[in-house]
Image (cartoon, rainbow, N blue to C red; front, side):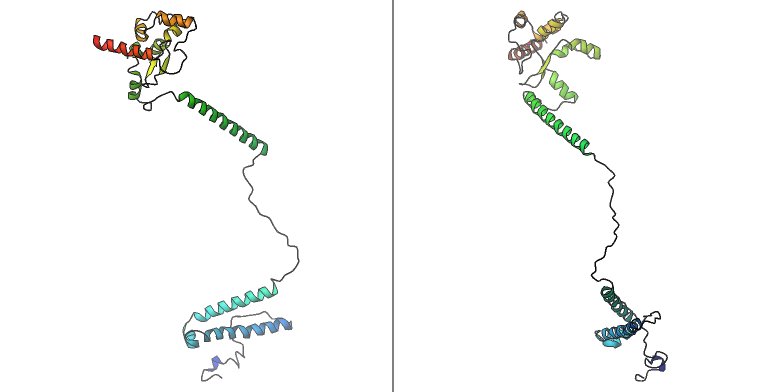
Length: 265
């Protein structure tokens, strides 16, 4: 017996007979090695748990007063024992072929190499063509001067109010009327002012297609045409038709025309 504890705590005699309650239960086996291992575990693990309780800061008394600490010690030590036993008995170096099952993600999108390379080639060619066109158009647009982005009524009036051809258009006209009035004129941007103006060789260009513009007195007064321009066009002389940049003579005559109108008003 241990000190003055009651008979129920006798660990050497009946009913325990030296077998503590450690929660380790083994099946009955006739193998002597298994029986020896079971006896060793039954006695070794409780001993390890009690030794860890003795190493507690308050000693075994503080451990017995805590209702959960022995459970934690038992779980920790028994788990460690199972890990060591499993490593010693099962995880051993051996040469054996193990069948493996390969699991992989199947691609939902299938890319045909020929089609992909063809599409990439087309995209590269398109990019090259766009780059060439952009560079070409940049050289063409470098003489175009826009003081403000178009798109509003104010910008449209600012670009055309001083051009002169607005007298050919009436507010009550429609699209067909506007097309007939402006069909025989050619327009360009004045690089000096950024306004939309009528090309001063438009009358010669119009005479090649129709004589209606020649009989229009308003158009004649607007573009101030004369025999000199028609003769130069017929002789192949250098006129402003098809030539880039503003025509200074035309701009001066246009300014003079507006000045005369203001004086008359």
